[in-house]
Image (cartoon, rainbow, N blue to C red):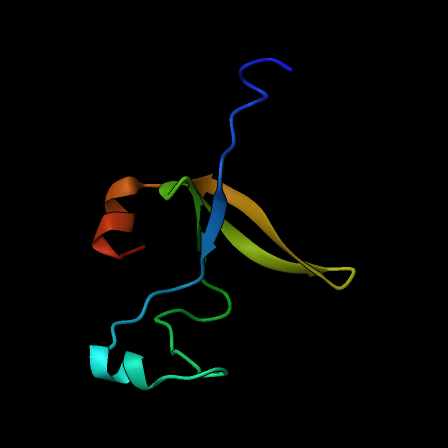
Length: 83
């Protein structure tokens, strides 16, 4: 195995954001719903090791949820919570 193949990269997808008071967060239990600032057709953020690398769209295919990469991420938009 080469050194490149030995590198692990954690990929995560951000669907939206929410701001909650700590007291509300502490009262939440299993099954709690957190409202997000996004709608079902909004682009998602694709992160590699918690660093924004791309934007994408959610799609359903054969009972699976997939993310289709649509464009490169703008790090400044991610940090500002926009776009």
